[in-house]
Image (cartoon, rainbow, N blue to C red; front, side, top):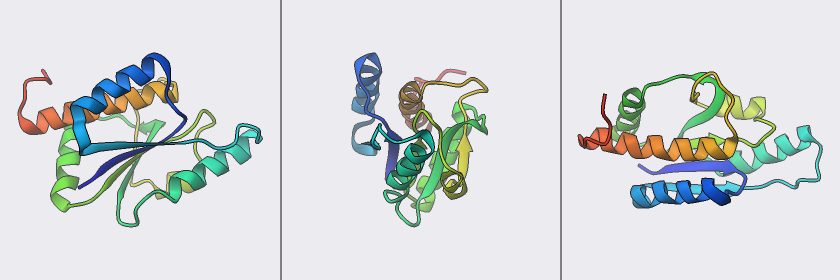
Length: 150
């Protein structure tokens, strides 16, 4: 099973440093691919261009998890259980993080799961760091490591 995060935008500054730390901890088990659409487009066209970049990078049989403020809240243990289940099924898992203008209905339709990090709106660059931390936490929960404490 491969786990990949497809994200709009390139990280820089403190977010990039935090993401790099979790990437290091995760090793090769999680790949992050960054994409950018032309910034000169109007918001709706930017959103559409970003959608096409994301969609063309999703393997056909992958389980797709969209990160969205309207998504389902899940505990870390529940996310770890889902990831373990997908791993047992041998499925690739793709996490999608859209740009500042959100995602298209086409992206929402392709998602098998829509996951939220609470009802608050988070900057998409910070969401990437939060996701990487949760993926690391999930690996530790699955391994029975004490990193996650209830």
